[in-house]
Image 1: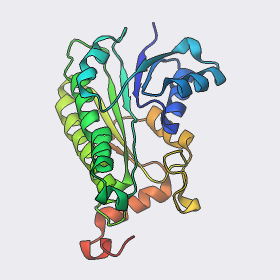
Image 2 (image 1 turned 180 degrees about the vertical axis):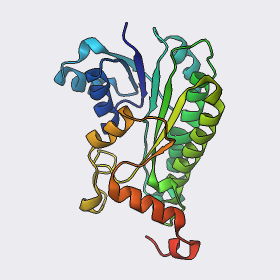
Image 3 (image 1 turned 60 degrees about the horizontal axis):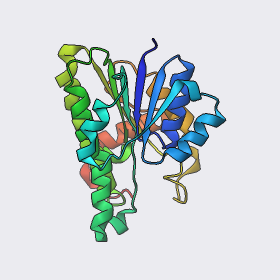
Image 4 (image 1 turned 30 degrees about the vertical axis):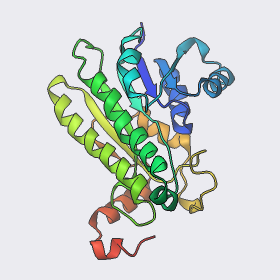
Length: 239
């Protein structure tokens, strides 16, 4: 029997590419999302129905997470958390519901389900947990600090989870991505030369090894290092 991959928030553009790439590598995939209709269409168009099981998963319905996990026919070898939600920073500053949703999708929901996954010591299949984070979480910037703070919290959670799971030899990776051409960023004014394709990010997910922080794309690796090293006075001058 082939190993199983659980993808949470599987309706995102990157997650869909991950589904396809994991299947091509011989994995069975459980694709979990609130919106199963779009996933069905994607899976049919790629002719991978036999290798993918669809399950309803709501990242912010915390009380359902234990039951969702218990109902999995096969406990996963790899878990990918790809759920995402974005509200413009100016709107988020004035709309608590938007801020709260970002916090719940990117952090609280992730911690809720991944705590369940990582503390199930009966699952001897578990080899790897991968989270999709963002360069927005590297430093606080005035243009996106609410969204960025939720991604920063998620990154720090995964860093600690990696240490916690070391005795069981379970890998934990954080994909710290820059601008991705996706439905979530559609309509935003982003620099074209810095845009990354979902397929490229998915390759970084599927091929993740032991390193905690993985920054796809050479330009974004440079930006990541600059952001880490810039003094606060210069970060304050960034958009």
